Image 1 (cartoon, rainbow, N blue to C red):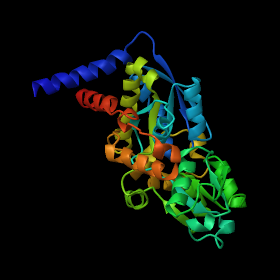
Image 2 (image 1 turned 90 degrees about the vertical axis):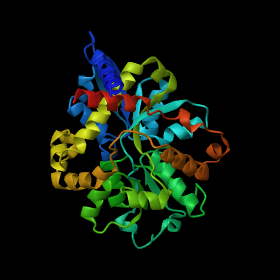
Image 3 (image 1 turned 120 degrees about the vertical axis):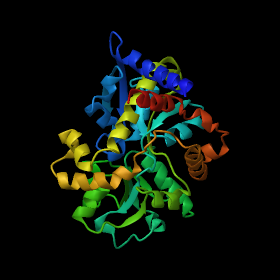
Length: 340
């Protein structure tokens, strides 16, 4: 018991040392679409002041999709990606070392829906052959998901034409106007569309555990904070601080009502229709992690998905243990329990 208390105190002191430093450490986080509820914990942590509590001065930069956020970090114009863990696995096949250190989505939350203008033409994934399908951006997790579903249905990756439509208002417009036949979306977009065109025809939905298990055969980690392995090695205090801030935010989410959460979010992200945003938030909350940890079985599921849809990943001998670490979030759990 004494040893356990000492370890908790040491973890807490480590975070406090960062928080009480002479100057806050500056960290730039590239988000793959701040309006997407899948990334809400990253934004909410800022709204709650969790980054400041651990001595971090955070700059959030918004991008249209996870692939663009990833490009910013690889190019050095941002430090950390708030995006989907699967990029770490995909890039490992190309000998690029990216490592996730806290996951905030235990389910991916991806929804493949049909444009209301094309609902009579499309009744299943196989009907997408020769169709235009919207994704947040080519090369993003929405694109990977589409290619996986195509492969799962015995179709080639290029069976459908991929169109980048973003994740928020631009995605809604593309679906409403029928400029795409279908799209892979993330809340609040599918909830907004379902309110306007009930019922929205959905071909695949991974916002809940049951749907995720039916699609992937296991839990599938979604949104996470990740960065280049060399950046993490040189910025362990900052990485620990980020993990602590996100874990504290996840705990706050699961101890507050959807109304409390919405009240903390920036007005421009909530939008004018609060009732619809709240409905989307209620759909999303179950997918937020309670621990911040990446389950090794979930990482295995990601590798299995990519091995099926990407020849490069299938051929590569990927060491999954290098694509994520629970070290920092485990330290964060100790520090937070020690501060209670």
